[in-house]
Length: 250
Image 1 (cartoon, rainbow, N blue to C red):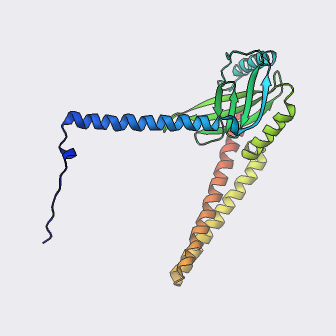
Image 2 (cartoon, one colour; image 1 turned 45 degrees about the vertical axis):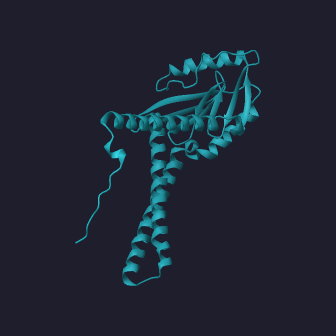
Image 3 (tube, rainbow, N blue to C red; image 1 turned 90 degrees about the horizontal axis):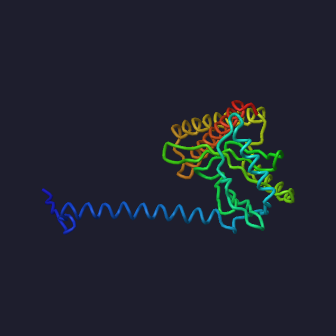
């Protein structure tokens, strides 16, 4: 018979108030670390070191932008704006920075195209004021989210920079500029890849049952299953974007 010895320590005999205090300290400390992480991440993503282009919007251009935003928000299906329109305009104008993962308008940072900040669609608006318009889905909790329109003013003299920024986001979000037919073709190609990968996976498994391959041959089922997964998510993503375009009539 095996004899078991149970050891105890002083921490196991803490009174209930002390245990509650320790528990509360862990909760507060964990929450503080999470808030610090979010803050540091926001500072990193919104820092000038992440800028790919920048321009200054004059007071006159800003007022045209504000009027255009308010007009667009009254249009059917338009999303509430994320950029505050009551920013004070300094004499030198409001600086706009196009970043790798978002935009900064004055001191207002707007995350775009990251986990928890999904791009629903993107367009460049020319009239009545030039701006980028990103319709975004921001995660606000595990099962909750909010949809906002991130509208970024473009200075009159920043046409070349705006094209550079547009090309950057087209490369990052290529599905957003595809036509519905192109998305259908991408969706079909994705399903084809998924079926080929699944068939290859089943064939490799059958081969493994018939013979006793060496250990390195495990790359076969892993690779074929990865191909199936890639095709599945490629098709699913294309279908999601296509449905959004069809529902919005674009």
